[in-house]
Length: 160
Image 1 (cartoon, rainbow, N blue to C red):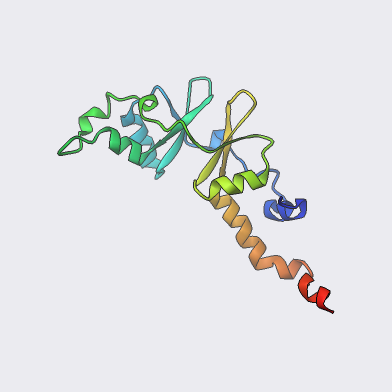
Image 2: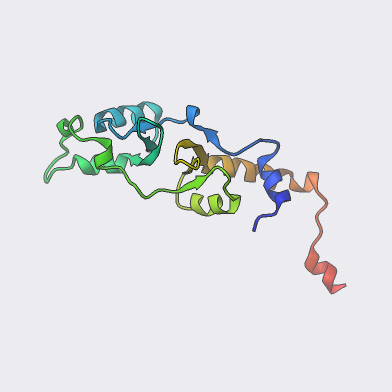
């Protein structure tokens, strides 16, 4: 379990680690792969959340999934991009937590993902917690810890 004090240091005055949904690039499940590719390329993302028209979280779409969907036996069939819907190739197994998540759960998920999606009790997309945000906080702690806190070695104290 992560102590509240350590979590507070990681947040460093922020109300939350969640990047809100209105600041996150998302794609509708009903969009074509062509639209997804355009959105992802123009924003330089390799993976984005997929939602329905009521903002319910549905999955993730990634560049490898798009390329795999248009791969032929001998070449890439780019003309198929406009015919295939995101819902037909998206990954429906993805890291997700509720708004009242435990930081420890998010940290475990971020080992294997660049972000964790956050949803409300109705599975409506609320935002994401990014590995970058966690690493930024960790970097701040590592560089400022001894300036802000008195540190003693508990093992050395028990030997005395």
